[in-house]
Image 1: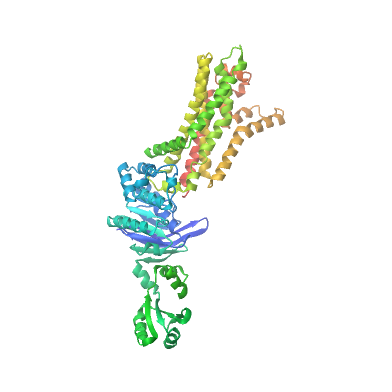
Image 2: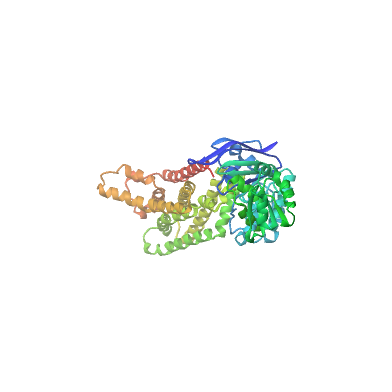
Length: 311
Length: 274
């Protein structure tokens, strides 16, 4: 059973095509990551799922109904955390959540449980204007979880969260999907999600550039593995003699050799035949950033890539 | 409908928290007290009830002040939420757009009604206490309170329409001030100018009807002509019969100025995409 069905969907805003021919299904209880640059259409796709806007082309179905016509019954089953969530600054965290709980017809005990779940119990009686970005984000998550939604849409939920909070955040997401909630979250940083989603959809200029689980995306991308060898770099380069793309590092202390995953073992065997020329080696598989850049069409040279690794 | 009252209650509480209620009530009360006591001194021994004089002076004050308060209160209601980013979230809740508009309107209406009734009511009670208050004057004063709230709601409905129709707060604020100038000051000046320029040639038939197109004028006519003892001192006694509209017509005009902008606001809001 699919919680969300998106069929050849497009959206134009006054002549500008923001979304074009996007088709994807999200099975119930799965977590989908929507990845793309700012302006790639992530938020537009979420708004379509929420029924806030109508598709110009195609069809969107959420929990079995058209969200733009779904009305209150559907929205009762949705949870949403907008990008840069805003609350009334003068209300306390408790008061804010109580207001949204009333609107959703949820009993007040649930909102205090949720405050505890997101770790805001101690700050509950403080005004929202004293909250840090991370605390607002957590209050936003608590708000989205009101009424035990069947579908949870989170727009850039991990921005402003430190690594520890991000771990807790994904823990909550795991518990939710285990209980059958479907989760859609967006990010422009694939690494931030640390491969903890079931499915990944990469949007590029309003089109779906890739869709599937990460292993599938990796296989399809056929990204090169980088082998960094320490030792006599110029000699190694000479011996390999144009067989691979090579970059000699500073001071000739190391050499980076790019190869396809299928050629990796052959390369390693060749290198071990070089004897003392090689003193050490490192194999670096393509990172999530490389994968993202591949699908978004900005491949970096291998030196940039290695610098990115050091960060 | 529950959602509507939740939203209305929140608006009202926000109004209490950010001192809108207290501020507007004190302002109206202070000015009404000043008019009630300073304004009644020149009455002397004439056969006029001080309360009736208060009705005339307070209604003149109301025409300037209450529309301004209503416009300032309402222009922000939708566009402000949209700009802060709260509206997007609200629209994903099981609340209809009709309920959002009506809920916010009701909340603001309650703020306005409390300020008007408490502010003016206190001055009226004080005025009746110190002078002699006949039933006719009391009825005129009750009419003043009621119509002042209606006038406020009419401008609140206009402000809501502005708030839904534009996409930036600053634009909404500008239009709100523009509406105030138009209805409260420019409209009457333009009508007067027209009469003078044509030396009274045009407008003998149209002129009174044109007054009905402005909620502020309908309010003024209602308060100055609806009650006999007020009419006596308001200078409206000699008004031509053509300008004599029954109070019910004048109240209906005010009501239309509440319902029509609000209906337009709901229609626009229902159609727009978030």
